[in-house]
Amino acid sequence: MDFQVVVLAGGGTSKKLIPLVSKDVPKSLLPVANRPVLSYVLDLLEQSNLKDLIVVVEGEDTCRLVENWISKAYVDRLHVEVAAVPEEVGTAGALRAIAHHLTASDILVVSGDLVSEISPGAVAAAHRRHNAVVTAMLCSVPVSGPPESGSSSGKDKTKKPGRYNIVGLDQTEQFLLYIAAGMEVEKDSKVQKSILRAVGKMEIRADLMDAHLYAFKRSVLQEVLDSKQTFRSLKQDVLPYLVRSQLRSEIVSNEAQAEENGNEKDAFSNTNKVMLSQLMANASTPSFHELYTSGPNGFAPVEIKTHKCCVYIASKTKYCARLNSIQAFSDINRDVIGDASHLSGYSFSVHNNVIHPSAVLGSKTTVGPQCMLGEGSEMGDKCSVKRSVIGRHCRIGSGVKVVNSVIMNHVTIGDGCSIQGSVISSNAQLQERAVLKDCQIGADFVVTAGSVHKGESLAKK
Image (cartoon, rainbow, N blue to C red; front, side):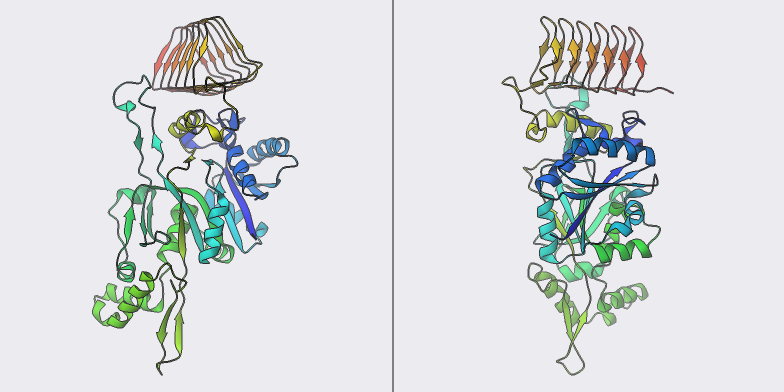
């Protein structure tokens, strides 16, 4: 396929992921089951035989970190060009900044924080089949929060799906007719009358997440990026703009003008109504979006240009989530060592866990199912680990309890500590008998002996 693949790996800091991100661990290198999250996207593309990639990183320093890691991890596997763009330019700004690299007829854009098993090749194929200007992958909204078996109390127990987007689809669920994302979701939804007239019926869905995997027709994407310099986000700006403008035919724009002037009836004759509704009723046939009206002599057709915005809706059984918040970080780590362990790339033991051969366990220490203990890590006596990931080269004392938590690399934990529902970043230190519940600890932070913290975010000033 003549597709260029662009992976948007983001920058060093993501406000939603503070204090987990740091200058040494940017968002794209945050660990999921002891592997950088970016590796999940790169592996997925490799499996789809999409091996020629541009990875876009915000900021020169972060770019060097990502480039160093890719050059070691994917040598002889992928051809990757790593491009630095200014920080905080947004997803549309990032593409604008590398526009001169884009030469193929179609561009596949993937977010570097996607953890999924859905083939990007399937999205590309649907895009080509419909000759669309954009095809967006939508997947089921991930369920968020600790599992029922977790010992967290009260309302935290219930896993609940978030509300991400409201989308309007045609009856065949192939064409995207309406989208509200971000802040728009909370407002009353307004749908253009022209779209409703055209479709007759539109299915509104609030249970689908935009996975931030898009196929674009390059010429149209570049035209929008050039003409709309204020657009910063693909999801919030570019996609809604393409969806809104897809039926901007002469008829529709006349009607829109008339609606403003209050002369709806005059502007939209019955024949045109019928033609548009027929057009959308035939959505699954090639004639969709191609509207012909009779010329003055009744024979010569007058083509009215429209473009197609399509969707690829992933199967509910396929795993798909984005690591774009602290909650998502915890959920995805738990999923990839749990129900979605086939994504981890590790082989699990008969006890349904992964303990590196070089890890050392003290006497009467138990590492339960759905756990991971990284290379070179050591645990003292009478420790208990449940549904948690422990990174590489950690030093954990005796009598330590770890539940539903993620501990990154080179962390030191003193005797008698209790850690529940928490994330501890690399090189942090917990002195003896410290208690953490639902906390996030930044890199290099020291939690003092005997201190108790609940629901706190602790980081070096």
